[in-house]
Length: 512
View 1 (cartoon, rainbow, N blue to C red):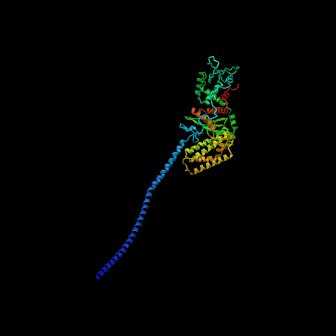
View 2: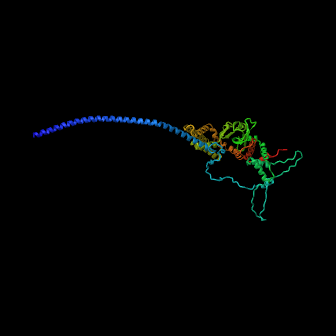
View 3: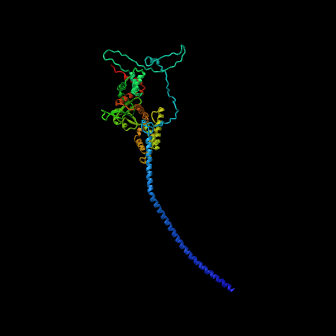
């Protein structure tokens, strides 16, 4: 028993010593582990620091390597943007025509031009109340026959029957008429062309646009070769009429009106007056530019020939300088300052606004154009209802809306990059609408003033037709003659007068 206790005590002692050694070793391991842990943390910190430094070094190296590429890319992008802007600008220039800018229709060339008319919503064809046109027999036929203005020929195909139905055939008979004039002896006998042939020649030359050689051929064919006037003779007929046009009388009619339309158009000539006005400048292997200016209203047209498109020509014409009403024009600087008021053509403005929207990609242009067309439609509606003026409240609303739209255009202009597509066009239009507000809105303030300058446009259109057919005017006197003759013919037409009677009156022989 004693030996067992001693053995057990010895085992416990050994286990205690072993536990002590293990505890000491455990402490050493813990201390060693703590030291290793500190080293690991230190190493991790160093790794993190090295990683961060490495990333910074890599980022710096990449940045330095990529920086030239970024600069190059930015430079390339700027060049591409400039190239795109230039392409858009050139496309806008190419696509400009008479429908979306102030360019004349003659500059459109052979390109297909879209229809610029706005849809009206009306059915195609004649509208209700439209007066039809058909051939009819004049009720005063017997009187016309007695006056020698017509012939009445009866062709009987009834075979003797009492009842019949009348069919009419309307025709013209052309034949030479030789009038023998017997007078007392004195001056030697002569042969001259009568008023009718002169009047027809003048009309066909200046309205029908027939060349002199074709006109001579026409008379020869129509008379079976009995009448064959020379080209010089035919030209003298127009010169005779021009010399008898009382231009000052027509000008006085314009000066007595309240509204005067004015415009000019270029024509090609082979000679024109020089700066002094005393000598003629002649073209060599080419043509020179001349200008036809029109001053007109609903009843009178006056055309004048000018060597240059300048303010001196306006003064030389002596029409605007004496006029005291409203001058309607296409926003040309030389026409401002004459008369009592200026009215600028709204149609030209709308075409430019359309170009600004479609070609310049500035949406504001469409809104401004829609506004101008809207107020003009309101005016037409008022006139259809026999109203002579716009309602004052509505007019103030329109003027406020006009100012707001112009301000919006100015704000858009501030956001646009200089020389970008549409920027310069927008700048010009906004500036013009601010400065000439009264001229653009006068047609709403006074219903006697038209929205457009179409009256002058129509009065000049035949000049372009003449130029397309003839190519140019062979002499300055020929252009001057054409202007005088067309002033007479167009005025007679506007007043509902018989053009041939007016021409015959100018072709009548002078009193003996």
